[in-house]
Image (tube, rainbow over all chains, first blue to last red; front, side, top):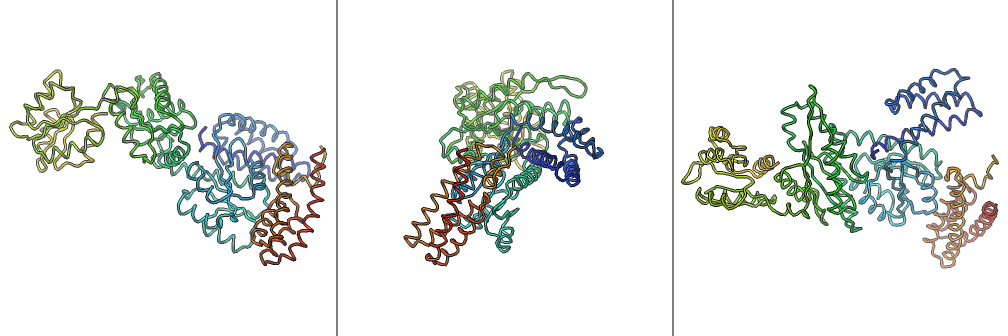
Length: 511
Length: 114
């Protein structure tokens, strides 16, 4: 059960509690209690919480259609089924965090005792500064704010929260002894979602929080999830990375990041169609997610790439976790519409997150090991502690124009590749005989030879015909591109060289 | 089931009926309010009206949270007089607050002893 499901569960739990409270009122104020029961049961029905459980749905309908005299018995039946659902999910629930900013330690502890349960963790900050630190490091789903703080006016802190920190979806509930309408209006103007004057009825506050948390879940689902797999998207992952990196920087606990790429996924799409490809991606994301810990953050980075952030984990630990995920995936037999079966694997690179490094910088590090894993035959996980990973992939660049050669070398070395440069065919032959080459970048028109002929001869050589080749052609000669592909090029790039175009092409071919 | 005394009800609203938690909250309330009253006396002696105002605000918040409205009102009054820097008047209110708290503490201690 992930955090989003837990947020949804808040609304469900609140309805069950409200139903229990209404049941207790049956003996005292029967007609009002019956009305309340019908309203809550209807709310339960339309929330969709029972959609996956036909038995519960049927019991809800039985309560809705019940004559008043049978209502208590049917309600008992419904409550026992609902409690069973609550108990079943509590065991593996990931808690949502509520930040309580309150300088009065007695009130803070009293609220914590009442509001904390199997789904919620209450974190207490006595000052604005403490609250800022917690927001930097933890994934906060709601802020409960007293606006009279020892180090700041809580209204300034509210403004700061809305300006600098929190996504607009974060509910902020003010609890304050200030009862003046002008203060309440100001808080709403600054971005508060609710205002509870003290003393607050704890049960009402708890129900209100459940309602806000469920609405937040709906918002998060729309804005931060990948539609195909349901995993967090790139933006949500980047936010999670920033929080984890801040925490790791303070605690000095290791943090590891992995990038995974599904092997030969293009072939799955080409052979079985995009609909099967989509199903495969969904199934893969389930299998990998299930084999990770609840604290690991997995996201879809784009296309057939996934990223995983391992908290408090060193490289051997992250490698072990991903090897387990890979073993689970290798066992899975996929089936396409006509009944054909096939297997899918992934390759992955892992990097330790360095202090101060951005998510992009860390992914570039992990990318290097991913490409190495691909080059070594795919279906494997590599990190910098693997001997095989320390060997850089070698690119042979055949280009007689020095400025172009320099530019290409700089771009390729920037992503961790080793570049061997030949400015004529003689030197190129010598380098090919000396080193194992992983890829070639060839100028179509270099001095003293014809790049197309060289490419054709490579394609006829049994030892070199599988090496990927990128051909550099001159702008304004579109026929050269066609000629290049006919001669056996895997990619063609027109001069002047665009860094993005070159790296995208090279990455695709090495993957 | 025996009906809880009104003195304890305010604590039970937060502890969800868990007796151990109720006792924890009662102990915490007694300790913090006793300390706050002592701190208020010190602030009055030292004519530190800012500190007096802040502590009275906190003490009033705790008492109102668990339903001790009379005591909470006395702390609020004290807070107002401290804000006006009228610590002479504050001293009188403080004596009343002490008496009110002694009565509450007697009930709470007998609950803890039961």
